[in-house]
Image (tube, rainbow, N blue to C red; front, side, top):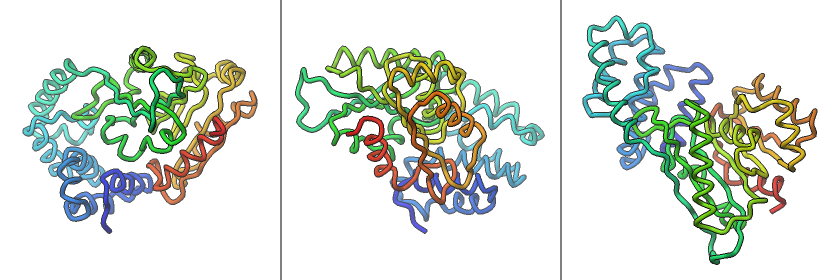
Length: 318
């Protein structure tokens, strides 16, 4: 099977992982250059290789796993610290040197990391006119480049939204940033970005929607229920609990007129955390809809644009 985009390929890998089909996932990864266009393979080589290291470890192929890590570090690409917590890797004579090298690469890269954002304006944008705003948050670990390839701005732009993609300042690994490493830093990043957008553009602050995938979904909920900035609605794909998700905070959000969308992959449903959150929504009368992503796990659905259109109709009747 051929994949046009890396995110489609990664979604298949994630679904196989959710099904504990590690060998099948590894077979796909080992032949990624055949399944992906060359441009996509080259662009996402690090992500493909780090996944190979993880699945080698799942299959107890520890030497192969650490060989991949060694290759990545020799290329100057910092891996996440979590992969070094794989107990069996510690038995390799190269472990200490590789971990020290990785720590050094991470430290240097984190010193340079800053939050950034990219703005997309609707067609026929008129300076001074007030526009609704959508804030898009990448997954963990991710970046605004890869995120905007699958969570496209089109559905929002067509409905007159300004769209801002925000990239966390918290570096998790090479080219991968995290929202959930420190939620307080994430709140500051998003609030600062929001204030900058207010200075640059005319925003209707009564119509601000926030959304994201995985770690971005968790942070979208946190921003909403902590009332960091005025949020009218949220779109969360694969969310989990955040500390600000309390019955009191959700009730206050409902009183502010907040509406929300959850999406999750059929293969990993039901999830206890999501069911508990939905129970709270119903108890405090916060309007919500739940979309099931058929045939996949914790991944992006192929029909995301259609679901985003449906989500906007529910949240703002637009």
